[in-house]
Length: 384
Image (tube, rainbow, N blue to C red; front, top):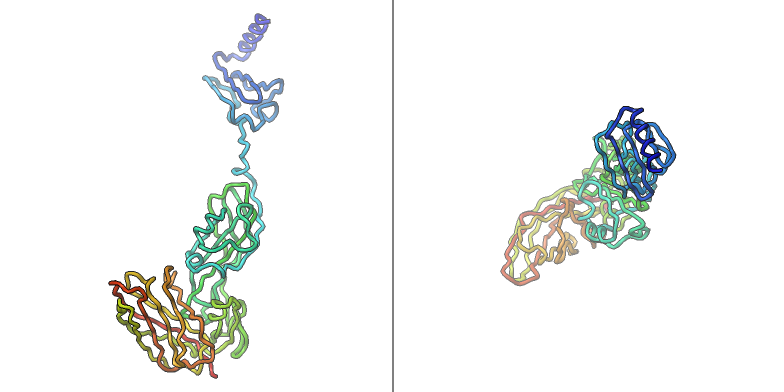
């Protein structure tokens, strides 16, 4: 038998005119021998340049070993090898269903950084947001896509995904990125335009998120008239602001307001003051005038120069002598992304014209002297 096999092999080589060219491939599913001939024999299955039949099409060939010496064979053994996990690359594009959640419960520090983030575990979620996992999300069977355009002039900016597609490692986000047109009024106050999408965990690799949302302008020419209701999707007409929208959005997550003349709003800048290190309360006043009667929105920014701002208690007192908290021993940034603070406790029925007072106290007695460099109020008013 050995003599017969040797004779047949020499005859085959002589027919093709190729000698000394042998490829030996050994895999977990068996062995195959390939000569320099353009045809390849795989356990009785013969192909020409396209080894789609025979034992070598199994995914287990990734554990085999390939040894090639010289040769001019037209088929390559590497073409036969398919990884069992090759679904992560080279797969056809597919749509990714998602559920959109309102990210209002997230701290501002998680909402203001612009860009897109994919979060695949509870540990990642905690590290990136500092918030509890929301209802409707179950890691690791669910993943979260968090997108933000950063804090933008309010209102009128929006981020609304309509489709999510996986394609060759990219997660493509399509939708609209709305902006107010030039004929719309906005506050100085900014607020994040962001979104939170929940998807089922994918069995493919995601190397990047590709933002393909389309910028769109929202015109206010045909917006709601003075005295009419407004919200995030119903703008006021040109020259009008949605009074009360800031307070209702930030404090109760129920955006709504009343269209009033933009002249009913004003921005007022106060001076600086030293903050004693011995716990003594410091106050500085700012006169506000030219508004109508009572408050609809109040926003405050405070610029500090202090080595330990987390030691400070900051409050604001209005002309009606109602004093409310702005920040108390706050360890997070006072104004992440430059977003102003909307204090809780003003009724919407208190006087706006008069002296407003910034009240600051260093609650930790030590040597940490500091100061308020300046502070600013934005107030939207209405007639009582």
